[in-house]
Image 1 (spheres, rainbow, N blue to C red):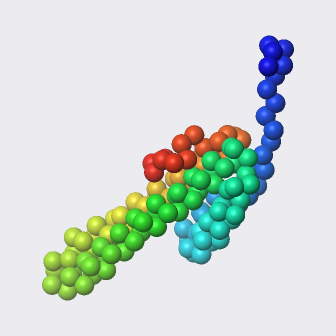
Image 2 (image 1 turned 135 degrees about the horizontal axis):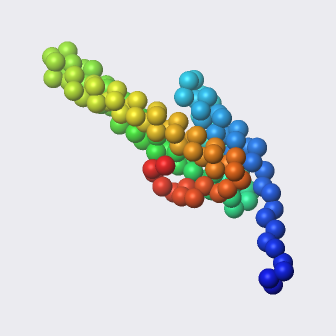
Length: 132
């Protein structure tokens, strides 16, 4: 490319990643739409352009990381609930509930940050990270 030529960035369809982000955020209330969003993300990741592929990868990883932590928290709540009958499990119960809350907040923050990058037409900079 010479100095007088400019790089042309082809627009990619941002609609479906935005729909998936919306389904994820709605899923914080009902849970079911997260699964619908996950299916959409898996179906479109391979055919998406490079920028939108980062968003799909980010969304898929967000789902699986949050599920892993929700299972851990659920086991703590279950274990703590049973043992709280003899007052030993109350710390486990509280820890499980705390993890559930933190993971829910983390999930929402990741979706909002992803939406910000998407609205600017940018690729998600670190789609493979477990942080934000």
